[in-house]
Length: 457
Image (cartoon, rainbow, N blue to C red; front, side, top):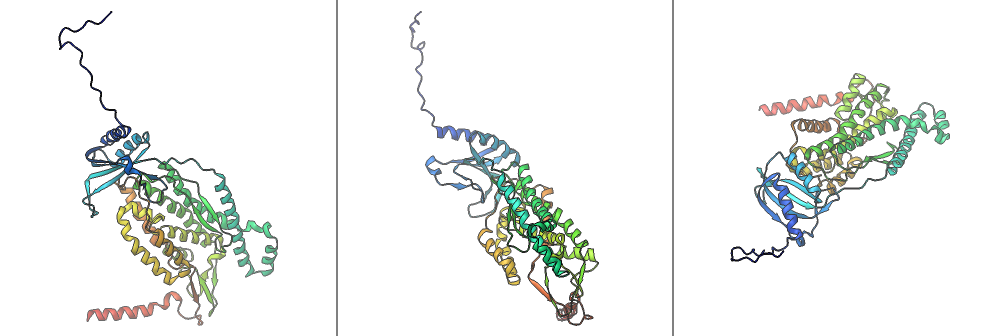
């Protein structure tokens, strides 16, 4: 059957106008705009042409993800920033894109932010790393256990040689058969270090961040602890400041949960050794917590000119002391250290203003204990500027995390040891003279009285 020819112009079919095809770039822009519009009232938008996206932009410092900035949107979030980010991130995952949330600054030259306006940057590429094999972690752990056990055996022999040189020599001649004697140091020290790194690990997994298992570093040439510590590698950027705090603080807090009890057990099972007048002794250095622990266990602060506890004489005491020292170094509030993570999660970009004051303080410690702090001062000089910036910098810490962050930074003050293993003291030749803890009191009182009288005048 043929179609009947229309008798009038009005009845004739209208010719369709062919629309220009939509490019893939324009189609992607529409999808990005729709996704962002679902979480933000858009006031302004900027799209970069594909040719302008050739310059890679790092998503976050310290994360090996390079991505191209393709769009920026400014406006007001229609929901809480945390909820908005999760919703937008779920939509961008199918497009292989990533969102970055930032407060909107009042002007390019000022750091003043407008709390009612926010900026969303969209970047290409997402980091989905493949799992790594587990065998390197196991091999390094076993080597580190043997390394620390060896150092523990050496320390045990040194302590035994002061009492029975022949017995110490006999044990040393048996070689690897007596390696088990270093097990107390290895078990206690690696328990502290392992808890520290696993705290980071489980906090990262809780926030669904790809992370490696701990890498332990053996060092049998160190006659102090037998290891260079351990570390984990974050393989994805932090989502927000909550995740940054949880991952940064979980390690030190978990490590201290074991280090403090081990220290007290070690001190409780240690004996005070009498000091010989006129002889010079090494001094491990005190933190506030370590000094308090000795005072609680022994009923007085030592060394007091008559007695002292030999920290290396008991593997548990030594492991606890080392655990406090390692944790305090990690809590220095700068850069990629755990303390830097905690401080940045608490005060954001203002943490960068403390770079030079913290570096100046560490530089001052170099004058007091150069062997300990010189290498750290150099490391912080070159790497202390880099902070782990989360993808979402709008979501603040909740009240509980803010207080916990302050508590963690106060812990740093309590456990920090400014001059570890860099001091010596000589017992006064007169055994009945004032102790070290009292010798400075009289001059101090005289000085205070002179200042007081001068001020009153």
